[in-house]
Image 1 (cartoon, one colour):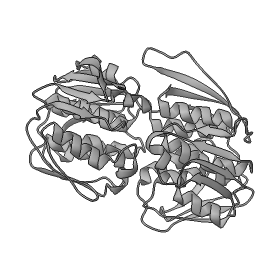
Image 2 (cartoon, helix red, strand yellow; image 1 turned 45 degrees about the vertical axis):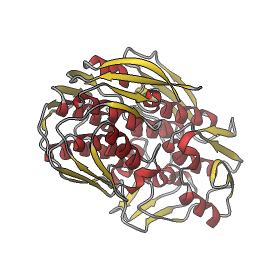
Image 3 (cartoon, helix red, strand yellow; image 1 turned 120 degrees about the vertical axis):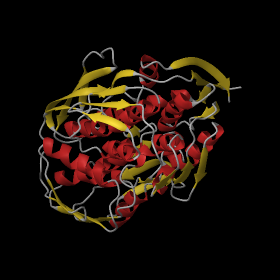
Image 4 (cartoon, rainbow, N blue to C red; image 1 turned 180 degrees about the vertical axis):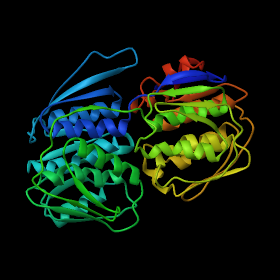
Length: 435
């Protein structure tokens, strides 16, 4: 019988200060931009989560040289990345692990080389859709091969500048992938968004970090992106700011438990998941927002309707907040989270209901009838980092212990999560369970 790592959490409020890890979204983008530059860039405040390791190793396969400083007590380091101004294929197989950002950001890189590049992955990534790129490959006669629509994917051919039509209701990661490579091509290009663009905040992150590396894109109200060709990435020094999608877990912990201060956050950030602040306030949370930290007090919150079309990664933790808020919370426009590391709508409805919540799964969202407290029980992370962390926060308001199976899933984005959870007063026992 195979054993999986689990944690048993004895319910208790969390309290204290926590340094929020660096933004995973910005770390991916900074590493890629640095790798496309000619010269050495210094990227400060990097945490080596599984996803970030996947992107860094992939860029090494494309010829960049990377070295890092000693990792500090918080698991943070600086990375020095030396690019050659052009890619050089050193390994033709790119292991994207379970990182959707890695594969979607880096598939267009193959089009800069003209050599055969094979992308592999594991877990749910193997079947996550890549149709937006397949359409471009077919239009440009770029050869590609996959395994019955699943990974591994091999790509061979040169990406040509031109007009690229992209639906706005698919992952913005496809748009970002094109925005990385189109400025390098020898002629101008245009990306036309054919439907309303979701996850605009993630495109904003891309445009902003491109500018920091001296690449400029004209944004016509998120309907068209005009990209001049023959641009050059220039190396720079860049510090990655704290991650609001990770801070959201501890913001909700403060609402449910006791005072929590989330440090190293940029309140002027362009991160889409900064929406957690407005959503929490609308639900009645007591937040004190300063320049670089958020203080959260225990609050009595009420249910509202939450449109997550621009911040889908918040769905798991918002489900927990809704389950423990007075009245009804509706999470809407969330259909895309079904194709993340897990089907997050089904996962959160299933696992929260095991704890005694009242959650109804809808086609594109959740209907949640709040309770003052939950019971506890045995739940599963679905091998999804955000599900594991959300269920851990739910334990704060449980009357009995919560056992989370597959608890190591947090390594995908936040390797120190359990240490930070304990630092704030969380009571954890590690254990192994048969699967």
